Image 1 (spheres, rainbow, N blue to C red):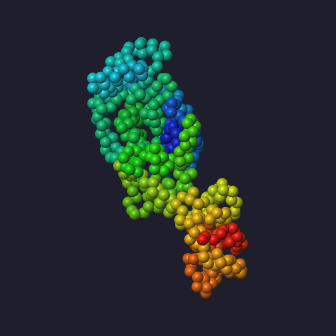
Image 2: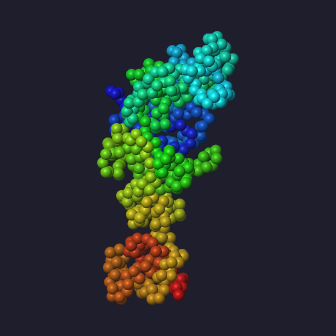
Image 3: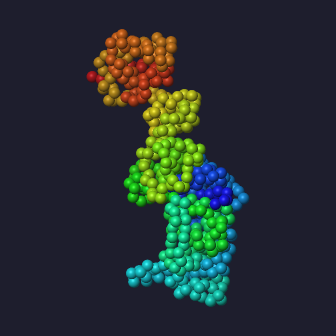
Length: 511
């Protein structure tokens, strides 16, 4: 296809953006960037019944957090504005009427109640009702009514819809960049509604075809749930005479539950304790909340790396990719046809890898807001050093406070198990003697402190574990933390002595 690559991500603002939607946006973005193309964001808000306040802002914030840059569209603007379908409503009726005039569509005046009665009649006979060539000329449509009757009904304000007139017994041949050649007989399809007078808005089928054409979209990369609509969309391009500019289609596989059975849902995340949305969400209607990857402590680059590999195989053993590397390597040819099973533990693994590669300066920026939430104000260098010491033990950003809080807050209570094990016998006296050794040091660097204390322990014939664990009880208050000389170096001499004195003066040795 010798035309500029232009792709679009077109979510509906009906709630928080599912990670399956983020993956669709990501694949569109990678494809566009790889081909020097444009990424368009269009908001498909024609379903006024399901519109949720705040959902559009959530979509924009989610894409920004993920590093998916929008070249044109909502929040950015561009030559094809407006990019919200609700603001384009005047455009669609003309195209719907064009199809009626050309014989590709027709008016239908059936009420919802009449159609429900018909369905029940069919069911009573053990049949399935389909609004198609078998019934459309026997119902209240412009195919069965006179032109005068149609006009009279419209003029008096009767509600109507415009339906596509699906051809009878015709083979539609289609090509999908992921699934290959697909053929469907139109006799298996119904006459979809394209436009509704009730709210003066088009359905998805009409709106997305018209908008993709007007916005010069070259490739439509979307979820496989839209694959059954592909024959209709092919025929709409034909009906409008737009076959030459019809975009190439690619339908992405589903994200599946960790158990592999069915589409990943919020319920799965709630049950198993992992997010299915990029950011925290609170429903404005019900107050119901949902976890987000950002707030749960994931890095956006780890989240994106994980998502990229859910359905796409790079063809090598490499698993860690930067965004530029993903752009260079991504191809639709290596996207799977079958669903990709989501693995919560693998998501954590990705985040841990990125955590371990962060510099102290990078960690400082990320960790400072968490420290401030706990009332801790320290320079960036101190925050970054604390996080850097413990990053190999952390999986999520939110782990860092539990892992490093003792650096900033001296213990007031001591872990009972450690007290029983180490705060007994000769250990209090040994700690008092160690305090004098530490107090005498002029150089309190990690290396010098380690050298002096080890020499003293050997000279006295004490057990290394005995001394170090008693010191850990004083400085940390529990049997956790990094090497003790990382702790002494971080705290400094005065704070170490203060914490030792607090233990010696306040805690009675175990019997």
